[in-house]
Length: 74
Image 1 (cartoon, helix red, strand yellow):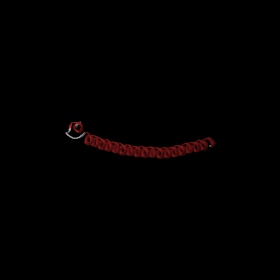
Image 2: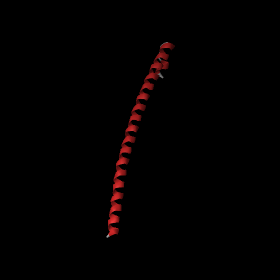
Image 3: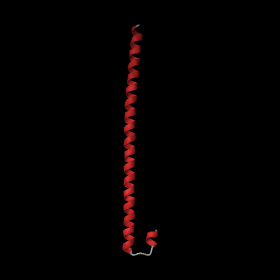
Image 4: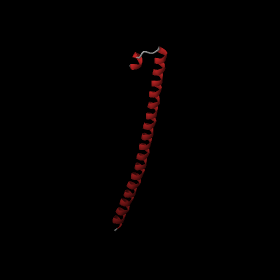
């Protein structure tokens, strides 16, 4: 608002508004990039955790099957 009310030429006002808009655009792009990196990192961590838990569950199921078969054979 101050830009529009300041005593300066229209050309100067438009230049300042353009600079301000460019700064805002650049910061928004930076924030979007950081957010994307965090999302990708979180998804990668979740995938890795899923794989670890899947292996653990598979091992537990296999151990259960072996224990059942052993008990059934006795």
